Length: 265
Image (cartoon, rainbow, N blue to C red):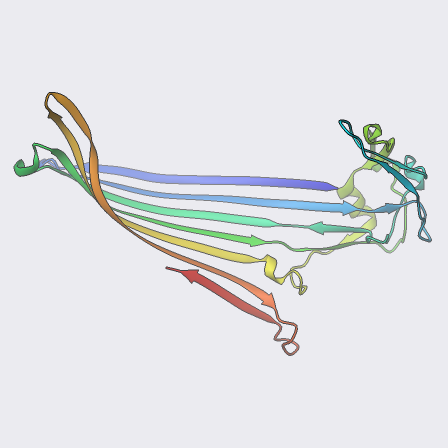
């Protein structure tokens, strides 16, 4: 197995505040962030013979308070005897998932000094609007990793790593190798997202949130005790939507891929 993951995060923003002679101030904030994740998952399957299936007998011993043991009869420690080939599980499988998550936001707040009639309780008031737009997309091409034109083959010594010791589980040592290099040299991997069982693995979701608010800021003294805080009201509107496709095997050829959309406000 081979797993590679690469994450990238980008974030930027702009904030500005204007103050006027009458005590009113206006704050504006614009922000954007994006997170992307790209992965590569590769799997190789090897077998002791290049020409036919070879069965093995393994003993499994469950341990109480220790590590369970599995002991095979055949020897899997020699890489010269292990062949990349179409086993009962295939010769390999791979996935190339990617996710993109974006968030755009805007906030506008006006601060107004409290008029005389409310100044005994409130120091000032905030009136504002906040908007956030978030979208997330996933794509996951995948597929079989097939043995190339050379057919069943062992893995060359220049691609071998130090053996892995699985003695703690009763398996002894097993070979380890450079999986991406083995795929590049001996195999064919053409990931796709068009197979009927892969159609629904691609999806888009989006959420738009708008918040309007009014807030009174408290800064006063009651019975000689300082009192600070705020009280207010906000109204939130959320719109969520999603899109994907699904495979309808009952539809005529060429019309099996159908969209599915859902959402709520």
